[in-house]
Length: 395
Image (cartoon, rainbow, N blue to C red):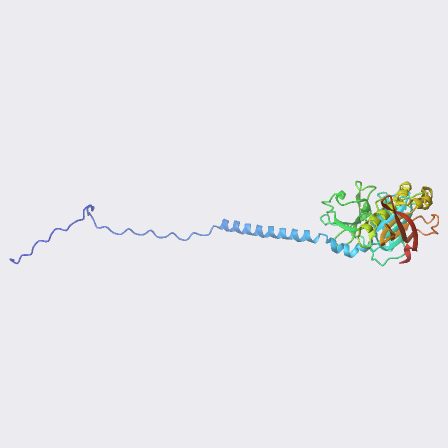
C-alpha cells in the first residue's frame, strides 16, 4: 500500500426506497380537545324525569294506601255487629213474612216494609236463636218499616253513620239466607256500586249496608229482589228520630188466615245421619212445609190412615189458620217395631195472639215426640205427643 486512503464504497439504498430529498421530521401530535362541558338542559331534563317518577310512585302508593283504608274487613265487621243484625219473621195478611233487620238505639229495628204488611205477629231472631216479639210502629214511602222490640237484649245497637259515606269507600250488606244463615258480602261503593241482584235473596231485604267501621250507611228495601234498592243513611236518621213525621202508622192485620215465609223447612239433624234419620228428616220437614204453605189437603198423605181419620182437612185448617213453624231440630231418632220409628223434634210456632188457644201469646217453643209407621213402603206420622212447651220470651 502506498499510504493513500482508499475510497469508500457507495452507500446502498434498499430497493424500492423513495428518493431522499430532504430530512424528514416527525409529525407533531394534535393536542387533545378540552373536556366537554355538561349539557345543562339535559341535566335539567333528567332531574325532571327522576322527580316525575318519584311523584308518580308516591301518588300510586298514596292511592293504594287510601284504597286499602277504605276497604271493609268483612270478618271483623260481622264479628263486631253481627249479633245485632237479626232475622225478622212474621205471620201476615199481605207481607212475605221474612226479612233481615238491624237493631238500633231504644229498641228500634229497621227492616223492609214488604215483609210485614198487615202483620198479626212479628218476632226477631238473633244469630244465637234468641227470640223477641216486636210491634210495627209504621212504614215510610220508600219501603222502610220501623219496629219496636218487646223485651230486652244484651246486644249493642248498631250505630248509624253520622255522615254520608265516602263515594270511594267500600260497603257491605249483612243479611240472612232463607235457611237462616247470616252472611256478609261487599256491594261496592256509591261511586261504583255492585248490582244488588248478584248478592240478594228475599230474606236479605231489610238488611243493613255498613261501612268499614260497622256503621249503618243504608238499608236494602223492595217488594222483590229485582226491585231492591238502598235507602241512604241521611233518610234513615230521620226515620228513627222521636216524633218523625216520615213514618205512617199502620194497624195490624185482621185476616182470618195469615201466612209466614213459604220456603221449604229442613229440620236440623242433631243425631247421627243414618238412612233412617234422613227419612225422618224428609218426613217431618215436609210436614212443617205443608203446614206453613196451608196445603192441608196434601198433608193427608203425611198421616197414617188411622191419623188421617182424626186430623181431617177441616180440623187441620181450623188449627193452623195463623201459625208459622220455624227453627226445627230433630233430637231423637230410634227404631220402633219392625220398620217403624220414634222421633223427637223441637221447633218454634209463631201465631196470632187472638188465635184459638193462643191465650194472648204470639210465640211458643214446642217439643213433640212422634210415632212413625210405614205404610205403602214409606214412613208416615201416626201419633204426636207433647214433651213440653214454653213462651218464646223465657230466655
